[in-house]
Length: 366
Image (tube, helix red, strand yellow):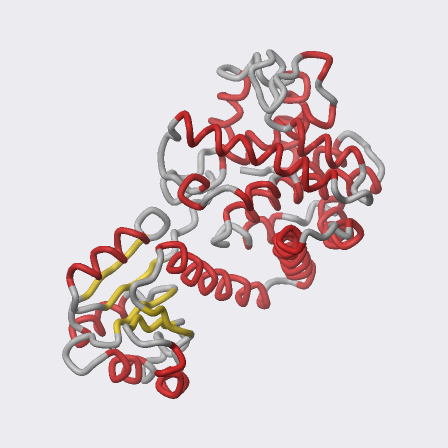
């Protein structure tokens, strides 16, 4: 049975019912949320169910947010909880109070939903990544190396710089070694709680593509290309608005058009880096194409599709179906494979699907 990780719990303590409702509504599309109007009433509940991140308003009843935060620090189960103060004052005005109570930061009202999500997501991920320090060395090296390489990509894009492909390949090398030893389940489990879905999905695709290559007897260098292609295949999603990328439901026609643009954005970005091998670009460019020509962005079909793309599309679909999202549980592998062989028989190369299914069974992946 597939493991369904718990969606991160966020708590909001604010005596203003209107503002509290707005914050809760903004968070519910991504997290579980507990809300409280009174700090004294919140303490017991917070101790029973410590949140991943706590948002506390400066004016929370009865004695204010800073007094409340200082009380929380006396309870071991809450002492390390990242806390964000919401306030009408600028951060510089309350800097001393923030440092004194040990808050992770503040959000000045009124703030955008994007600022709220960015702040909360960053703190959730910081906690998850800190937990990787307790993992075995190889799992720790894979996760820390790939998340650093993945995060650096957005910096390169923002700066208009080329991706140093060697850094991506070097980050993927321990992953490929782990696959060769059939010792990759630790880091695949470790990434399940990560709050950056694009990274978690890309790491899974990189791992399964490497495993696919290993199963087919490809040499290590080719497996590195596959893994690197997996890590880079969705980089264009950086350009997709958060509300579209993480929408909990069916996309409208216009939203789907925006979503599909991530492929052309990925191609444009990867083509700007001469170091990136052509097979990596093919994986990115064709992983949403389908054998019957109904895929995108170019409607390629049949013999127009590269074998790498056929493999990548299978891995991408399987990962998308079996990934846990806040709005859906992780689908079991057997169910996903059934969809891929029945409902998607005209979309995916069934010869490769058969090999992929055997590979999963041999590796005992659920």
